[in-house]
Length: 206
Image 1 (tube, helix red, strand yellow):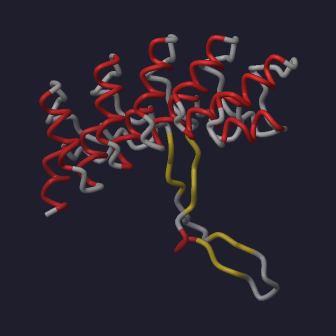
Image 2 (spheres, rainbow, N blue to C red):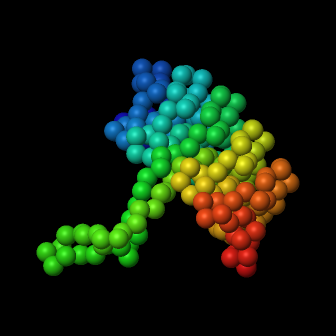
């Protein structure tokens, strides 16, 4: 759809032209990815503002991963888009879908090419991340700052691994984000699903 292309390119004039011509500001593709999500990922603040003002659904979720527009913005480090969405009542603490994956070592190919599972295979929960988790994992300092200053819960853990935002930042080597979170009052003793605190992540990162 043209408005999706315009949103991906961050073209506010083209988005406005298409909206004036009757395009639905809440349009979503077959995966449930909305025009606002594409605009949030591209990061143009004028495009995001325009869609919000015209009635785009700020907290809509895609059907694949149950991600919202602010998660798209956070994953791409779009701090201005984050602030606009937060001001428009985006749910800062919404979490993405939790899915279970099977370790590659627990899968093997049969002689006829089918993927089979070992009898004692294990499923690992993945996902359940907030916008703050996405930004911290990717190392987007200003996006993390925008979320923290907008009121995101800095101690919320992921629904899958119970990993805190602080731990997520540290295990991915983003110590500047760790400093920001600690200065904002993040709990340095929040354990993950294995009972390990961010201190263990620091040790592993060394």
